[in-house]
Figure 1: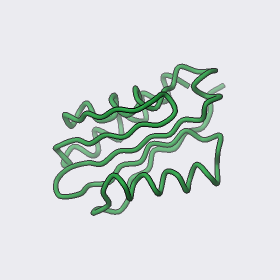
Figure 2: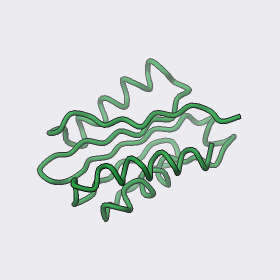
Figure 3: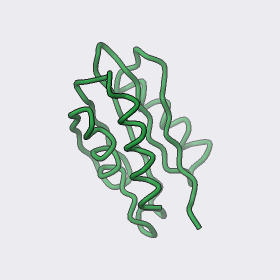
Figure 4: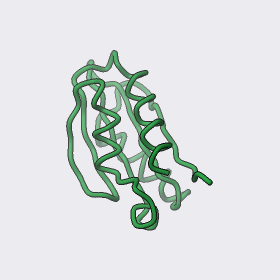
Length: 110
C-alpha cells in the first residue's frame, strides 16, 4: 500500500531558489505529497525536497536523506531537515541516473 510522491524535472536554468519556489507551490496545492525537484543550471543540478511531517513520522522517507540518495550518482551534496532539504550536484549530465535514484529511494521508503 504505497503512497504517492512526485519526482519533478524542471526547466533548465533554474537555480536552487527557483526550484525551491516550485516545490513550495506544489506543496501548497498538495500538502500531503512528498516532492523532489531538480533542474540543470550551468552544468550543475539544483535539488530541493519537501516531505510532509506526517509522512516523516509514519514512514522512513525524510527529505534530507532522499535528496542525498538522489544526488549521489552525480556526486552531489546538501543539507536540511527531515521535512525539507536542498542540495546540488556538479554533474548535470547524470540527471537520468539522479531521477532513477530519487524514484527508487522513495518507493523503497514508502
